[in-house]
Image (cartoon, rainbow, N blue to C red; front, side, top):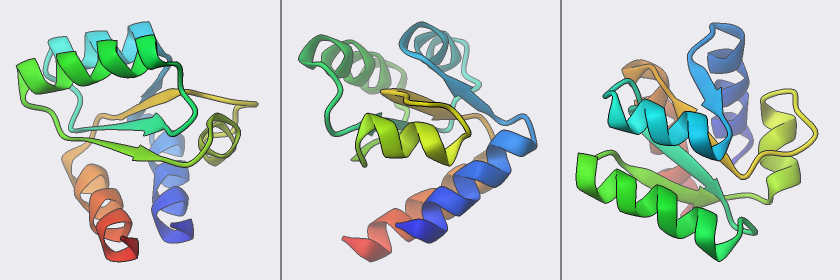
Amino acid sequence: MTKAMGLLGLAKKAGKVTSGETACKEAVRFGSSHLILIACDASANTTKNITDSCKFYDVPYVTVLTKELLGHAIGNEYNAVVSVNDEGFANGILKHIQANN
C-alpha cells in the first residue's frame, strides 16, 4: 500500500488529484476522474453518494486506508474521498492496491 500512496503523493504534486466529496463528485460527473479512493472510515452517506456517482459514470473506485492516512498521503490532515485525475497515475495506483489484496 505504501507504493500506491507514494504514487498518490506524486499525483498530488503534479496537480492531478482532487479531494473532498463535492469536488470528487464533480470530477466524476465531468469525466476528469480516472479513479476514486474512499477511506474505509468514511461516513455511510459519503460512501453511498460517491459510489453511486462512480457506478453511474463508470469510474472505478476502491476503499482504502483511514481518512487520516489517506489525507496524509496527499499532504492534508484527513480526507474521506480522493479523485485521481490522470489515467497513468490511476492505473499505477490501482495496480499496486490490487497487488496488495
